[in-house]
Image (cartoon, rainbow, N blue to C red; front, side):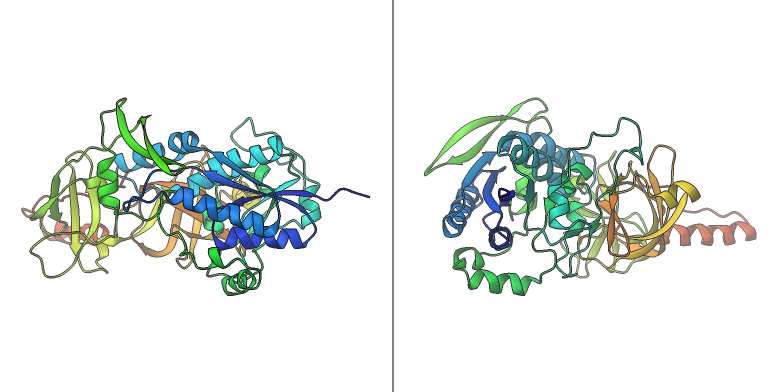
Length: 449
């Protein structure tokens, strides 16, 4: 008689991963629960949320009668996720730590721990996503070597696994999985991929999992939680290579540890400037605190103003009135080298150098039709069929073809805004009539880096 397949589940202390473990147990698999402690400092109310989540995960394992393990990736999270998060903000970009965390922590550190240390046949998470493999196909997968060149050899991996959107389109989380490796994905189960959130809650209620059912969903930075972002970022402010004193909780008492900070953010006061007439409207604590499209906090102004561009050299933030101002809209961006999940890159893109698909750069935003243009270094230009509001460098452009998530690339460069293009057309008309004196062009006449 064949031994039961061993599946190691990443338990977060929430309802989704708890129900995922329950469903796998019902399928007859040998299930082990693992809680990852990646950020364990006190929250703003003095509560150690990681310890509380760990206790909830442990209770899930007791209810389901499965083994429980706890691992710490605090160092790895700091080095691979949070330091990158700070570095991106320091460059004026808007990072997405959830995508980076899945790539480096959940589907690398945890994945290898489950396979190498616990002897897992497969891993599982509570993500709302699906793959092109059935359970038994997942168990038959073997390790594949990483590509040595720019692109993975097409003949190196047979029957590649595709990442597919969840049945519940509103809860679909393929956006956050768009940087996961083929090696990890082909050995991962997503038990909730075909379910709705309401049905998952119903399963939890019927199986004594009330303690996780009553918890609020996490909406903050991955593993860090919901915080006052501006205060949180400015608190992590030390000299490069210096040390910051951080409070960590371990058991019932908290202790202090020195954590080496490789990246830092120092307050850099600057000016809010109108994109229309270069008038100074106010001051701010740091240009890195603002992302394109967000409302600017400017005292003394009745109507809302929105961030449309940033000048990292001077530290100024350019703003515009109205949430639909043309300075907020662009239809062109360039990414870094794209991570393709199944085909690297898609055959149609290699053949034609261009490919039609859809993309989004925020979770749950409507998919936007676009055309990709492949560059020799693996980066792509993305041309949207219509101008999109608040494209932001540092975010990930995630690509879709039908129900398949193809992969993603980090946005590094933006084309000119609709407002700048309108100004250019206006100047062209003036030039025909004859040169006249004009005010400074201001920012944005070229791509934003």
